[in-house]
Image (tube, rainbow, N blue to C red; front, top):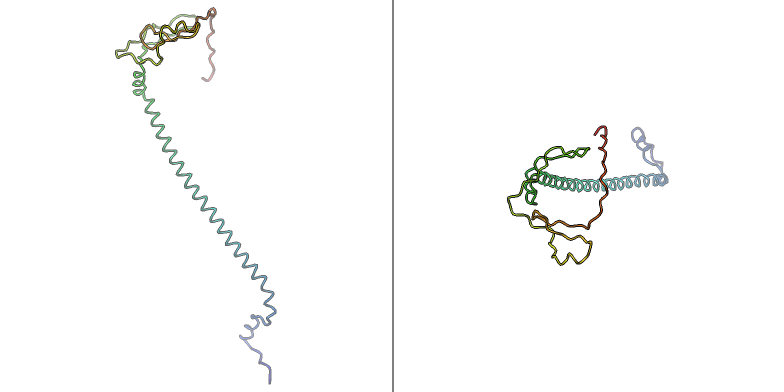
Length: 183
């Protein structure tokens, strides 16, 4: 019998696009594997990149939350500092510690003259504060010669420490400080 007739027209064009022999299939396999490997590697790379970006985003959120809490704490501490350094609070705390207003100041000039009128601070009307240093019994005066022993102050306030007598150097005149430009 006779061979199959040759296709014509459109069928011939389609036949040319299709592979004619099964041996041509082996040449395509490495190319297909290369494309599959490139696509798989690209997808894995995108997955790793997406995971890294997500981890960075979570870390950024944690750092922003920490920054906000630390900023809130800083502001609370600054409010406390402002409250403690207010003039009324300083005055109240000074009175609690037994301090009294000093009055007008007096200054010593470089030549030893007194400028202003020195005066003692006003006496407190309230009871004297509890002394911070314990009074030492009189028998302790003879315990160690030359040691500092607290003694009551003449005003009746906190005891003052008495130190052993040290010979003092003769008084010398100190020159006035030189002014620093810009300060």
